[in-house]
Amino acid sequence: MPALVSILIPSYNAQEWIGDAIQSVIDQTWQRKEIIVVDDGSTDQTFTIAKRFATNEVSVVSQPNQGAAAARNKAYSICQGDYVQWFDADDILAPDKIAKQMEVADCCGTRRTLFSSAWGNFIYRLSKAKFTPTPLWCDLSPVEWLSRKIGQNLFMQTAVWLVSRELSDAAGLWDTRLLGDDDGEYFCRVLLASDGTRFVPEAKVYWRTTGPNRLSFVGQSERKLEAHFLSMKLTIGYLRSLEDSERTRAACLKYLNLAATVHFYPERPDIVEQMEQLAVSLGGKLEISRLSWKYTWIEKAFGRVAAKRTRLSYNQLKLSARRFWDKFLLHFE
Image (cartoon, rainbow, N blue to C red):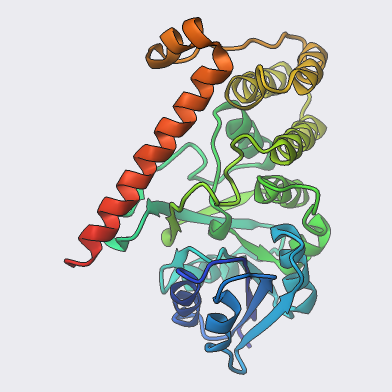
């Protein structure tokens, strides 16, 4: 009998997207699947819309708001699959995404291989999704994957992964302390338990760019900043547990320097101090990069905090304009 694949969808205030997301997993050509949607205390119509899809194959449950990681843990506690497909409520899977990866899985002979796929970024128009390969888009050992991710500031979107039950059990539950990058930290643990990644280029995921309310957006939230630093410390520890060498420590230093520049300096001197100590333990020192030339005059006149806030506001305004234009053009397609 073909393997059962559990498709697990945490959702929170995703009424604009949840219907399309669920339909894309219902349309998967891999026939033996179960779909579990966990609504994490939404205050909009997300739960009502999701319930319209409920069948023997699609289960929809709700819980009081506890965060995305808790919703994912709830979904996993219910599922029965031999493989797990994690999925977000605003994204889209190509119809044969799971089938393409399962074709490769059937030939592997081991449940310790972690399968990834290509992903493209879009806003409203799926036809305009941009698939941009990175050095993670290939077969890699766990240590090489983590070294590239950390040292080159790369990532793989949540839905690209197809994870066996054996690997999922070995990795443990999602860390509910993490308000962002919970997927990055979780899949690092999955990697630690794996014998490496297998990249399946024919399988495709469409990752939607939403507004500043998206989970991965850190911004100026104190809680998100603290959780992000916790995720960073854990990730660095995972890499060093695999290989504590000059090259992996150099990758970790790059990771720290970039995060300090973008997120923590000078707003959180307490975290910056901890980052400096961590940098010393890696055999280097923390180095704060200069801002882009577009913002240096603001920094000189009003300070670095004002310059960073200006950059953040500008990027959000630019994204809002792109979203408005893309939605406008969608009506003509």
